[in-house]
Length: 114
Length: 114
DNA sequence: TCCATATTTCAATGAATATTGAATAGATGG
DNA sequence: CCATCTATTCAATATTCATTGAAATATGGA
Image (cartoon, rainbow over all chains, first blue to last red; front, side, top):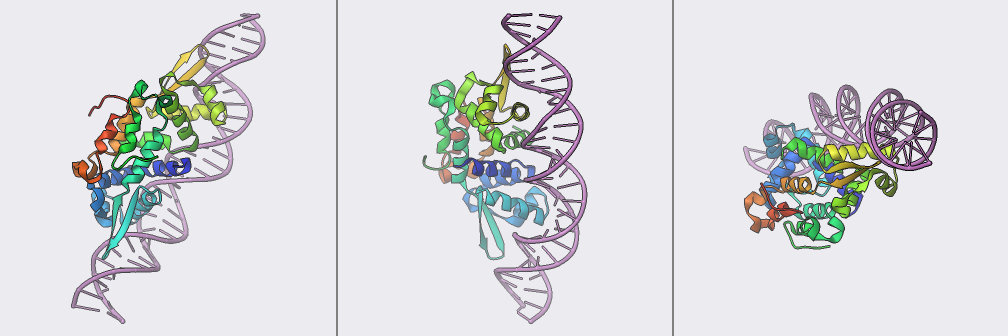
């Protein structure tokens, strides 16, 4: 993962409403939720939600698909795993004994990978 | 962990130089590095580095201590673990079978905890 | 004390971001 | 085709943030 991509993802998460959306979608899992329902749950306007969902999607943290009139959003768990792995890469000079096995982080919600 | 605290930490990481510092300090581990050396490695001014280190420290991602003339910075691995756990809390409605055990994330660099 | 080292603080500038409401676009059913 | 539902786009505004260089603070040695 490139640094610029990680920054985009972190910036997407570093905002009150988007973080709330992200956590809602993490809890929801792959079935996802329609934009309108997310907006209602979070408590912001439709246009505001559209803006924030676009940020999250552009950062690769969520994906979307249309189903009839509604557009559903769900977390992209594999990219989340990549982000977390990036953050903790080479922990403690590659010696997990110093601070615990940070490599375990890379196994979040999916098979491990470089 | 509160949402506002998580946002502060994520915002601290969502910046080119601070993310580079964070990853450098993650790799370095508990011995830490002095501010000047970090600035030299990253390639920015001393005052700029001071600004960024203050942001990281205020977010709880790093800690600092003085040793003679130098001020050392090291990652606060336990708070990093808390942040990652916060991001992946209640993954997939608490059913790890859906997307893998995201709870494993909470065991980064330290004993597990609520 | 005087000087050099190491880092922080401060103020000013320029750039990036969130919010709002109105307008637009796409999908569905009558 | 029309009305409606759902969601996005756009422009304007206000806020927040990063960078710069100069000045200030703290430490340690001569």
